[in-house]
Length: 222
Image 1 (spheres, rainbow, N blue to C red):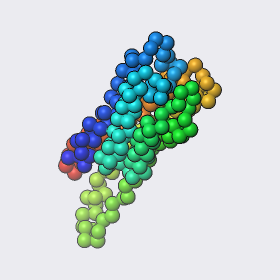
Image 2 (cartoon, one colour; image 1 turned 90 degrees about the vertical axis):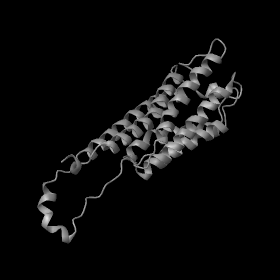
Image 3 (cartoon, rainbow, N blue to C red; image 1 turned 60 degrees about the vertical axis):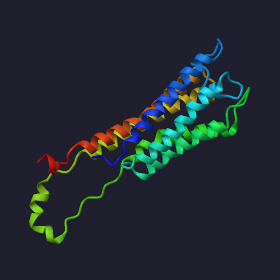
Image 4 (cartoon, rainbow, N blue to C red; image 1 turned 90 degrees about the horizontal axis):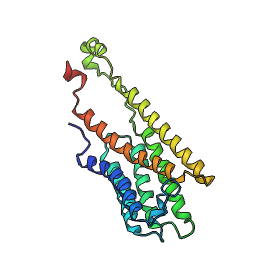
């Protein structure tokens, strides 16, 4: 049985639902002329946005879900869980400091930047480092049997998968940064891509942890 509580699955699944559901409903509530390719998610929760409460609730729910998932994902390394929690906290902060009419808020921009970076990097630091098991002296007669037991080869694969996920997220974040700082025509599109990807990754991590907890170890399979 996995050490990850079942409620962590609910919080992880809630993150993309709050984010994507929030911007879908908020965009539908905007007047004609709103361009999701060009305009950001923050514009939907800006102080002058129509029905801004929809995206505000969506972003607040996203941040709270990340905080809850970081608390429940006990199989991840503390550094990774800390960054996931930081991303959730920064998301809540940017909700408290919405985008100003006609321009951005410095606190909002900084909080968004911290959230994006933390949520992109945390998978690479979430894989725990396991020390090699030691064999006590009194277990020496069974040393040959221990040597014959094949080591678990899943840890390197998990580590490389986590690094690959972080590389993809950083690539998407870099694309969004270029669009943002050059006032490109696809600011909204690139922000939605990176935000959606970052919202889905914690769900994948919880599902993997739960699946790993249900699989029998090498000795049980033998």
